[in-house]
Image (cartoon, rainbow, N blue to C red; front, top):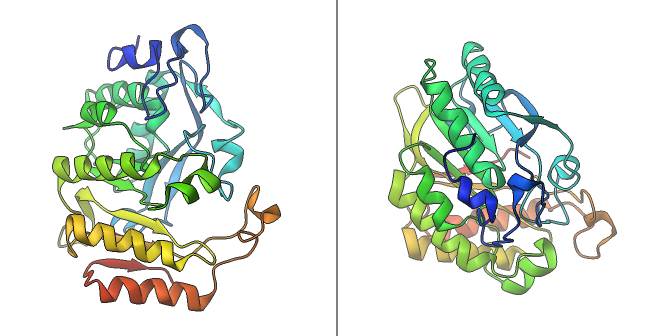
Length: 287
């Protein structure tokens, strides 16, 4: 049984696409997700930002399927092809408890949007069995307000992307032309729920929002536009992670303009843009 948000699965509207398919009866929408959550991996991950991975790692649960089709997706075998195995909520709750026993700082649900009802039930089941770690919602930022409302009081840390300001680019690169307006509303709701990222004396995050932005090759101007909007909407105190690890995965290698890595100069320009806008809490990747 999936009591939380089951109606969203019977006529699926978990994300802004609102496909309307009955996933409880086996129908599949844009993302391809079904009745049960499909999980590609559940393991200790040390590659997140320092306040998330800390010294003992983040307990990441990688869901399969995705409500976007980013042509450069580095996780395309699971996001686009659905590699993984189905888990009922009891099994998913058990994975959360197993990760807790491994000593991780948090449990980090990656690409959770198509699986929110199953995730919520698993969290509540796990908490009933002693789970007490922060819950991280690690999302592409293409989220619906109705779905985010279900997470209020359950999710402790939001790690959303802010990918684009251009509808044309969002459509061309990710098949998501309405990304900008939904992302803007989603980020505002996340900040309303939990505020900006709060880090303790041990350097580990317990609550709040940390926004991520991936710098794309040849499109530093898009990065500048995204950062300018974030600064104008939320102020320069907004915690920001500037990611420079782009490489031409999946279909990008065959797409002109996306078939190369980001250069050192491009990433430096992105860092400079954040500095000029006054961002004070920016995570930079070593290159």
